[in-house]
Amino acid sequence: MKRLTANTIGILQGDETLFEDFEDGGEMWTGTGQRERRKPVRFSEGFTDAPVVHCSLSLWDVDNGANMRAHVEAENVGAEGFDLVFRTWGDTRIARVRLDWIAIGSLANEDDWELY
Image (cartoon, rainbow, N blue to C red; front, side, top):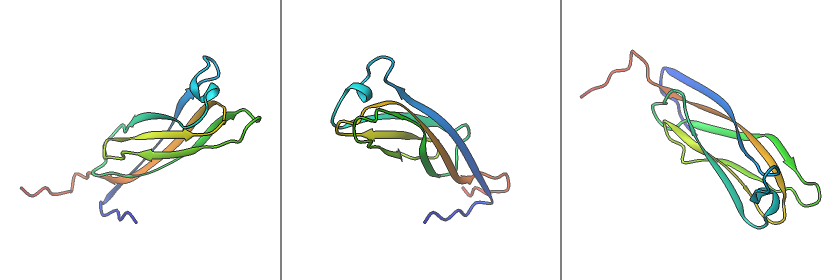
């Protein structure tokens, strides 16, 4: 459990298109086996420490001729940003993916004291 002790809590949200591989024959559309795409996300304002980040699929355009496999997560979460990661495997063919995310964490407050 992440315990928020700050007087000010920030919530940021966004969405990122990770790829559109059907247009140019990219590996998510034409490849097989383990595949990964990641995109660095920078927060518009930094948190005081690493926030909790939740991410989910908001657009998933796939070929229905194979199993649909996906793993979505936030990695390297820090006060200034994180990496949005999408993985697939096997014979899954994915044309495009967009992911939504939300970050919740502590923010600095003008009433906070900094001792030495």
